[in-house]
Length: 276
Image (spheres, rainbow, N blue to C red):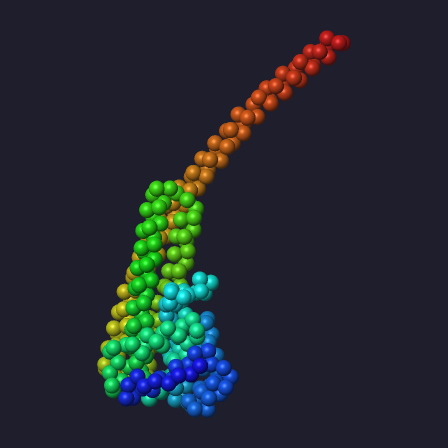
């Protein structure tokens, strides 16, 4: 599906969602999109980066974003790449059915100015998407506190497993935050981008936002790691004590058989001697 909208006087939005073959051909013929661009757009292993196509005069920016938790498939990664492809007047945003909420959110950015070019819109969009990391990291920390309270009452494997799941999510978020930060550093020094002072200031604001997100995520990851390790140790100790207790019970239960077996053999031996 392809939809069109004007975000500003200088920025036409081409909203592309899971295009079919006919729509892909239209993008190639009308906007200079290549097969390589389309490959990047729907490769979910792509990480945040930028690339300039001099022949087509198109800049590619891939940015990692947090998936919408309201309808996210739990089998999918909690982050996904979104691709912006643009020149001086047109902005193509490639999304899928799982990530189309991003384009809807871009259309609601209040700071978009009438004179904004595609690069301005992309920078504002990336700043907005960066803010999403704070929400999910805060939710993870809230879940950690709830699980920690539960573990204080009773140490159980289920809560520890949930803590491990939270830590796994943080690994994805940390990886994406680092990739996005690296991308923005490249943008700051890009000769092809030719960013204005205002645009460089927006990039710097986003870098600061991402660095704060990294600090939050690292802190949350460290706390979860320490809590999980501490309660795993308690659980292992309890398991060892239980095994020792079961071993003692097994020995105690076996003693009568050993005693009776011993006396039974002794009695048989004496009877054998008596018969002799």
